[in-house]
Length: 213
Image (tube, rainbow, N blue to C red; front, side, top):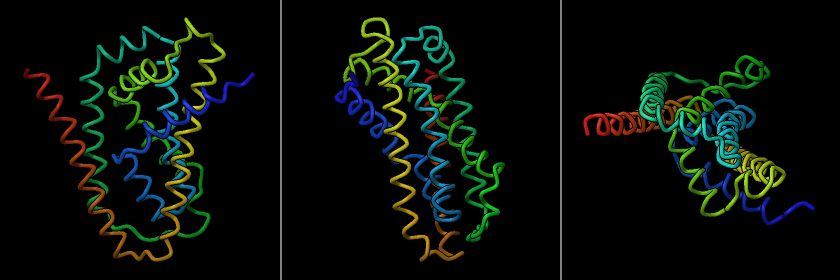
C-alpha cells in the first residue's frame, strides 16, 4: 500500500530544497518573464533532475558517490562558482527582447535551459550533503533498513515536490509577463545577473577560505 505520509514527506523535502531564493530561482523567474511559462518550468526541471539524483544517492546510501562528492567538494564548488560568474556576467550584459511565438520552443533551446540549471545543481555538493542530513533527520530512510520500495517512493516524491515548486513559480511569474517591456527586462537582467555573480563570488570565496585554511 502506498504510504501517503512518506509521499508527503518526500514532496515537502523537494519543495524545501527548491524554494530558497538562489541562482536557479532567479534564472527561472528571468526566463519565464522573457520566454514564457514552458521555458521557465523546464529551467526549473533541470534543477529538479539534479535534486532527484542527489535524493537517489541519499536514499539508497550510495557510498561511492557520497565519497566522491566529499572528496572533490572543493573542485565541484570551484566549477560551480566559475559557472555562476560566467552566467551572471553574460546575463548582466545581455540586451533581451520579449519573445513570442513557437521559435522559442525548439528542442535545442529548451535543452539548453534545462542543462544550465542541471549543471548549477549537480555542481553544488552542499545540496547533496543537505539531502543526506534531511533524509537522516526527517525521512529516517535508507535502502538498507527500510526497503527499496520505500526508497524509490521517497525519491519520486522528492522529484515531484521539486517539480511542483517550479511549476508554481513559473506559473505565478508568467501572470506578470504581459506587463513586461524590453526596458523592464533589461533591468531584470541587470539585477539577476548581478545577484548571480554575487552568488558565484560567495561560492569561490568559500573555496578560497577552505583552501587557505
